[in-house]
Length: 154
Image 1 (cartoon, rainbow, N blue to C red):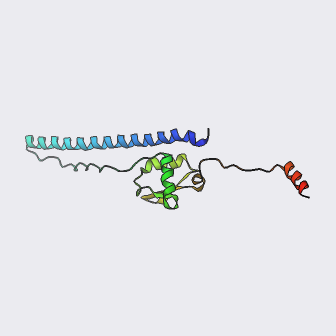
Image 2: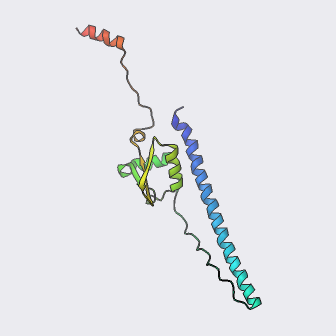
Image 3: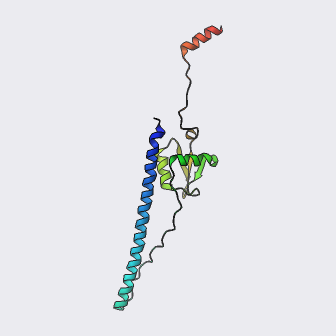
């Protein structure tokens, strides 16, 4: 079992947590907007019954546009980065969810590097990860075998 097998469930959980957080935040924002509209309606009705002007309240915030940001797994991100120029993607231009990408980069510092400036973050695939997830094989020479082969060549 190599290290990448244990990261796959972890990265999926991280992405799932990010999705749940986004859903909760969206639900709370929708609820807040609905309650603000209801409160404005109650104020208008009170003003109608009492004859006093309604209390001026800030307008309810407009419903946020549907986000097109997507959460990806580590494997999907690596595949996209390998196809990208310089193995780097602009997170916003690629319509990726910044929180999940940051969580993946934090969990995999040997594979991913965050960069960019301000509101335009980037993610880069590090060379070590681009070479493949398989551990490289090294050939070590045995000093005893080297001495024998040196004696045979003389």
